[in-house]
Image 1 (spheres, rainbow, N blue to C red):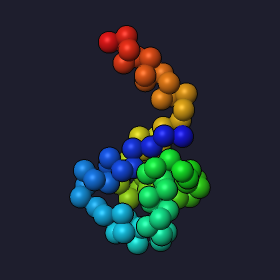
Image 2: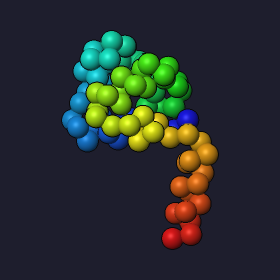
Image 3: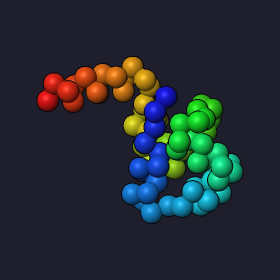
Image 4: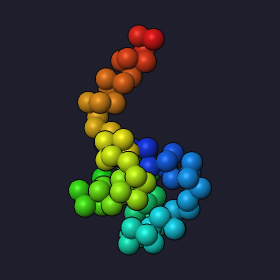
Length: 76
């Protein structure tokens, strides 16, 4: 599963440490999420989405959706 967590976090000017504190996880968890080494639990995905005021699917991208996006971009 791909995600836009790093992109969104940086746009908001939030450090990994600060996001980790709010979500009650380690900074290493945030780093692993951003690097695609870890997929969040459903509860953590909801917490992240709620924190940023977004839908889960706007942050976490299912692989099939990623493939469809790449195909659409190639056609453009």
